[in-house]
Image (cartoon, rainbow, N blue to C red; front, side, top):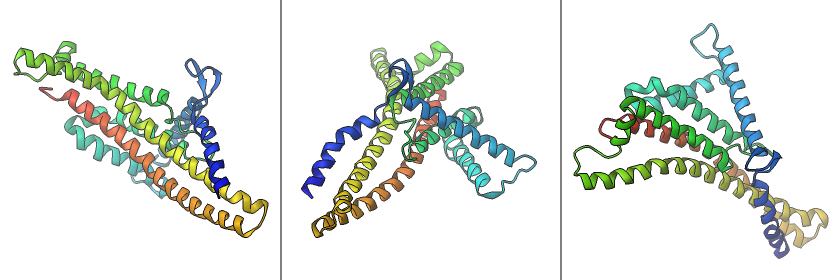
Length: 268
């Protein structure tokens, strides 16, 4: 059993390296990477689902079947729970953007749950780009409503003494740019960490069963029995990660909606 644990330890470096993005052409800074490929693939799958749903709903207002009802539920969930619940009367203006953000992140997460596939949201390049889109959007919303100078000025609440207002303004400016980082890092870390954990248990499952397959002895049989535990834990973690993939898409979209609401709010 000690040898099995040593093999797991030796395989950890290869596991971590396998999650790093590799370029198909160019390099990781300027080029087309494997992660970008899977992210674009997730977007294509998302568009295929949307067009299939649109065809299903042609000529009817009531969805029929598991597929149509499932897509309808997702749309209503984002509309009611995120948009209406957070934005109030202005929800219709922002629903297309927020629904798109949710679907893109969700499909990007779930693509990475398929065997041998990589999560499009499993690298900071992709999550940073998504966060940047959200950042630009809520800044645009604030400036459109209050004007450029009005939005910049609104970072500090009205009515404060000048020295205090200056300090608050600097803090709020820093906080505003920090939203860009936190959106990107939160999504990346949750998806990356979950896949690493699943990878570890997958390695442990195969490593512990190999001695028994090579030579059937009582000792190897005991080591192989441990693989059942690792397999059970792997399945449990996989189920949890399926839930996490949805939750992270929800959180990313909800925070984007909150930032839009703050940008629109009077006196902010």
